[in-house]
Image (cartoon, rainbow, N blue to C red):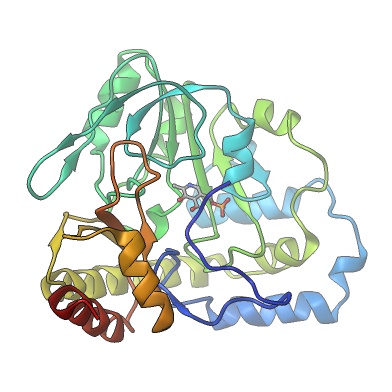
Length: 319
Ligand SMILES: Cc1ncc(COP(=O)(O)O)c(C=O)c1O
């Protein structure tokens, strides 16, 4: 399984400023950290999780959807792993199992994703380009009988319209999401699905797949606090992202996500070799179908200035 991110060292997490991983730039909210600590102190890890009823109830409350449509998983990636093959519009998240694929149209400033075929999986906003698909396009595809899995893993903190409400109307729509990105908790592993297919997908998943630390924290969180946090995060992402785009001296693409796709004049592998020695890393996108060694993805973070100085030096003087 490939993702951005740096290696752990001697069993400890990396300390570099890692712009290759896209998490909420506001970090894990304090109210959630307190609940995680409470879960550890109360010994929640000494118990098996139950049937996830309280967890699903809370997710239903946060997103205002019916509990029966929700499935819970060990991260969005577990739900993705359990799916069959789908058509994929490239470039897209590499973990989707592809039966066939076609390319988005790359314009000067954007990637345009058009839904085609009968059975498609797509990320919205798209990883790695940051572009988005409109609600009208999605509704049209579903109304014409298309089967769609839409991965909204970044949607809570992105400028895109969510499709959760459409799962009532369209049986062939499955929405995948996660708290990994929005609450900056990749180590806790909590993903979920919305749609009539959620039950079927859960029946293929192993039992006890969501650990009791994250179960405790989410089941006991105040849903209004989460909604407020997502709202603030979205605004913060938008502000930082636009500042980053205007001060980055390489070609960038329009982004609605907490990351920016850029095209560099030299290979990102070589850029990363230098950056690593300075304590930074960006995502080399050469392994995304349809991109190459010159594309790099940069996470939206408020501490971007040091990275940009390093990039400017490197691109101007090669050091
Ligand atoms: C588009 C997309 N979907 C899903 C995932 C996986 O999320 P999780 O950590 O919840 O498994 C990622 C992780 O990078 C992603 O980029």
